[in-house]
Image (tube, rainbow, N blue to C red; front, side):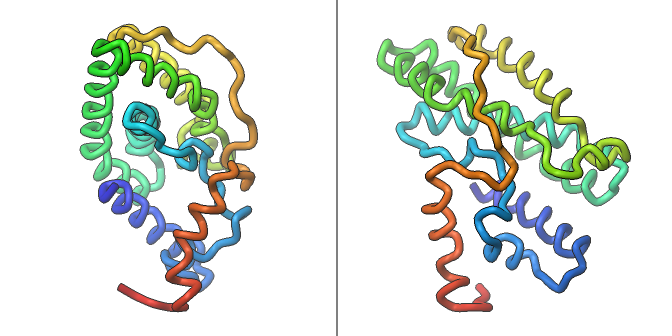
Length: 208
């Protein structure tokens, strides 16, 4: 979690500088309205038991590994530097989560059942990590951002190979939840936002 906070802070600091609208990184992180957050849906989902927690970490680590490897070659030098700095952490997250996926997949009947149930619960949200936001095609054309469609194809290749190694059947249901990264959210986001914004709403301008 500390790694993710550090990475997010680097992006928010850069975003506040690029926006040049007087808003700090804390303003961007804590004080937007719900529809202004264009995150993917998958991180909003409940952790549930440890199998689902590990599955979420695994999926997000594969996504971040692909994203940061691509961003390392970005025409934007600052984005490239942030990505390169973050890669070591993300590669560790992937190794850690993949190890537990294999332990659960090849462990007891109970552990495999719980992991398979978690896959049924959240796999339909995985493609949403690669959904494009408004204006992203312009950044792709300028080689600032990578093409999410190409990254998703790589994601499918990596996870398909991993699942075979884990002893798991790869999900075959083609349905994926729509509207990820559009400002629409799951029913869980409101609770997350209340907790996230409480201190800044209760004590405006507070620092720590």
